[in-house]
Amino acid sequence: MGIDTRPPAIAVMGPTASGKTAFAIGLARRYGGEIVSVDSALVYRGLDIGAAKPDEAERAGIPHHLLDVREPWQPYSAAEFAADARAAIDGIVARGRLPILAGGTGLYFRALLRGLAPMPEADPLLRGAIADEAAARGWQALHAELARVDPAAAARIGPADAQRIQRALEVFRLSGRPISHWQRDPPPARLPLRVLKLALAPADRAGLHARIARRFDAMLAAGFLDEVRRLRASPALVAHPAPLDLPALRAVGYRQAWEHLDGAFDAAQLRDRGIFATRQLAKRQLTWLRGELDARWFDPERDGGQLADAVDRFLGAPGAVRRRGLV
Image 1 (cartoon, one colour):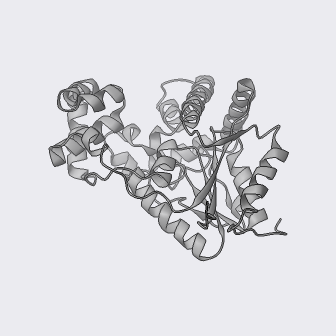
Image 2 (cartoon, rainbow, N blue to C red):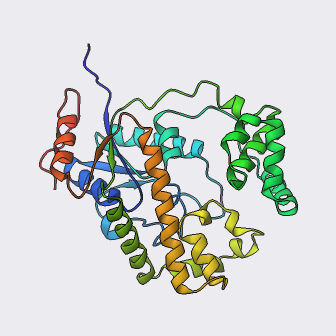
């Protein structure tokens, strides 16, 4: 078997609050890397505290890519992310540095590492029309329509999953072809890198839940509600007919904070609901990670030495670019 001469990259995956950001930054400092965020909340400007976006001090000296590339009211698809991330990675490799792909959005990782089937581009006017229909008829009625035109997609998409129902109907109305048919088409070529997939996941679920609670409390103390108040005051969001239907504001914590500021429940319930929603997100992320059969799992609190050894062995292989002596 010949030597694999593709450039190396490291994917740092894991559930929310598992320590991915700190670990990725440490890798970048040690090996001369640049970080490509693989997170569907961090792409939005203004989602900082509640999205646990690395701050200026954390990012100092470490180039970060795919942060703050859209306003909260602007669409951003997985396909757009994959194209932007590939362009960023090409630049990192051209500079002789190590791409570090860090985040917890499984769809973004899949789009980047495996590619997505091509299908029609988003149509803002049609999306708006579908959203208007949903406001009048309800998403369950649109899900029933989807079941008639694309039973395979409807079987995978829940009746309350507004974003995916909207996209599936949009694709069908634009092309006359069900989205499930488009998804069976061959995807584009995979990312031309050797990728070490590291799944950071605390073995003790109670420990992860405790980390989630501590982080949510820290976000509240750091001014998370003030951040959401600023979002609510944005003219584009004030004018939006249904801001909580936007993908940005469906990020965990933001919907709960928005509803709290609407007076739907008190501060104690905000904390409980925010922590519960974050736990549910972590559960979904862990379920997705179990499908990544080539990922190597580590407990970030117990397996630090094994993690370092795994990275050293990977980057010490023939053809790897390794930066020694970096802090």
